Image (cartoon, rainbow, N blue to C red; front, side, top):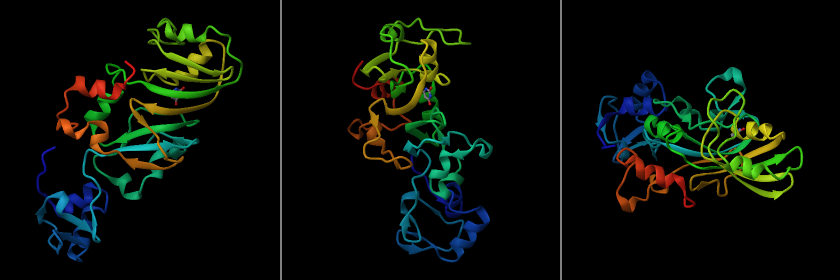
Length: 259
Ligand code: URA
């Protein structure tokens, strides 16, 4: 996105620092600097990267991508009625940003692991669209020992889930021991991993997502998150940005090395 100048009060409001009227007041009180100089006019226009709030650079502007280690017991929803929201783990002001930060796909309440969030609608669409088969790796614990035919069934591309019109795309099962497995899938159907095991007569007791494309959790503990830098998704040497990246490149970058 080409940088353009924006009114100071608009900048603060869109990044969730304060409401429009509060922002005007805070700016008039001298809380904002532009290139190190205090500016008290709310309608003053400046580049995002030149502005500081209480001496600190502003949060990243629109296009933020966050990698979170989702803990168990949190829901991927904006609806407070559904339980503890993953958004409540983010700083308060990030929850007030406009455009809104949303999860890229969902993990169940009782699934932990790698979750991506963004306020970039186009990016969100590309990553969740079934057209782009981004691999996701899950570690599961099963209730009952494997029978032995599950890897072949999952790889076959013929497994039908209850209520679905088309079979699951081929998925790769790696057996750790008789009740511990990893499963790599390239779709994001509702409760897909749990339903795949249910379809072969088993039950998933714990589920954790450890990888999406080339992205892993690294040292992040449950509940922690970090902003992903553009060049982690798209190496800067290619001079590409999320907005300009051709979809085929985006697709292969996230697809990982194993295809
Ligand atoms: N499959 C599931 O069953 N649950 C998740 O949260 C993700 C994939």
